[in-house]
Image (cartoon, rainbow, N blue to C red; front, side, top):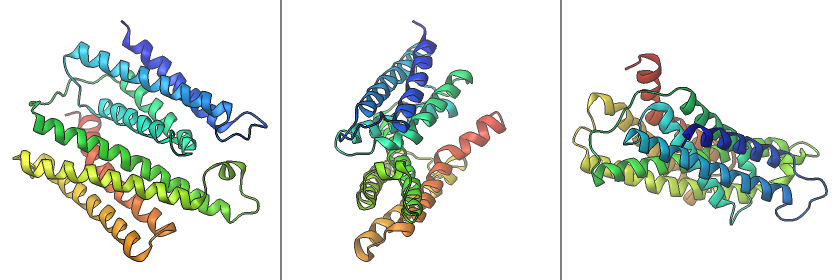
Amino acid sequence: MNANLFAVIAILAYLSSAAMIIKPLPHDNSRLGKSKRTALACAWAASILHGLYIALIVNQNAGFNFSFFSMASLVSLIVALLLLLATTSKLVENLGIFLFPVTALMLALSVYFPEKQRLLDTHSWQMNTHILTSIIAFSLLNIAAVQAILLAIQNQQLKSHPPKRYIQSIPPLQSMESLLFQMIGAGLFFLSIALASGFIFLEDLFAQHLAHKTFLSIAAWLIFSGLLIGRSRYGWRGRTAIKWTLLGFMFLLLAYFGSKLVMELILHR
C-alpha cells in the first residue's frame, strides 16, 4: 500500500478544510454553518489519513523514526486532533485557518525529505511515558500559542470600527482567554509529568546533549506556572497573558526542536 498517497490526500484535505473555514457559505448564520461542518469533516478525514500514513511508515521501518521532520509531522497531527476534539464543545474551529496549513506543511516535509532512521535505543514504558507526555504537552501549548496570537489580533482589531468580519465570527474575547488558560493548564500538567518522568527515569538527563533541553523545558515550566499563578492571584490577562504565553512557548520550541534543527539539518549529524 502506497503510504505517500495517503499523505498527498491528507495534505489536500487539510488545505481544503482551512480554505472552507476562511470562506464560509453566505447567509449561513447557524451556530456552525454548513461550510464549517464540511470543513471539519474534511479535517477529520485528513487527520485519519495522516495517522494512517505514519502507521504505514512505522510498519515499513519497524519502528518510529524520531528525526526532525517525522517528529514535527507527529506533533502537528496531535495538535490537529486536539483542536478537532475541542470543536465538539467550543467554537474554536477558526484556529484551523492557522493550524491545518502548518500541519499540511509538516506532513509534506516529512514525505519530501525522508531522513535516515533515528530510532530510540530503548522502548521501556518509562521512556514511552516521558516521550508521550512531552509530545502531548508540546501539542497543547502549541495550540495555546496560536490562541495567544489570535487574541493579540483580536485585541488589535476590536479597537477598529468596525472590526473585520473574521474577528466578528470568532468567540468573544473573554471566552478566548478562558480557553487559552485551559490549554495552558492542561499543557502544564503533561509538561510536569514529562519533566518528573525525565528526572526519575533518565539517568543522563543532564548529559551534554540533553542539558539545554532540560534547562529550557524547566524555564518554560516556570513561565507557564507563573502565568497561571498570576492569573489566579492578580487577574493577569490581555497583553500580559499573550506575552508570557508566547515567551514560554518559544522556550519549549527551542527545547523540543532547537537541537534537532541544528544537529540534523545544519550539521547533518
